[in-house]
Image: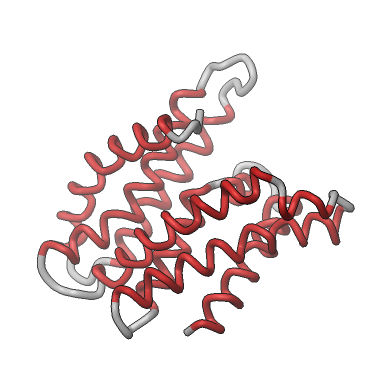
Length: 198
């Protein structure tokens, strides 16, 4: 599992940079999404079948490794400065990776279980995408963004619905997870704003 976490994190960071650099807007902009990385941590937790704590640690390791991997790709492919690897912003993103990895890794294991926790587990990756969509809606019409955030918001909302549909095992679980994701998304918007995302 440790090797999978490190390798998965390296691939996430490196491929994320390529995604942003070479895919057109708005799909390419998904690479700038912290919610997409949280969903990757959820997928790791969903995949791991050996307990919630292993999922939490593994997903956190993956997200932490993904940050320097992203900057290595940027240095190799477009000549960015190597010093960004140990810059304070990189360390901050790694700290966010520990928190998001643990939370969403555990959510992935919950989604495979039974009862209320399974609904919460399925709801969380949709909620984080809906929360980012909410941030995008706030930007619509801003002089720096114009109408572009509308496309980002629609894409993230659609992905939120898709991830709930894929992670849920029954229609009842999916419906309950979507209903749960809405208030969680509102809390997520507040958390993003408190963390300095605008």
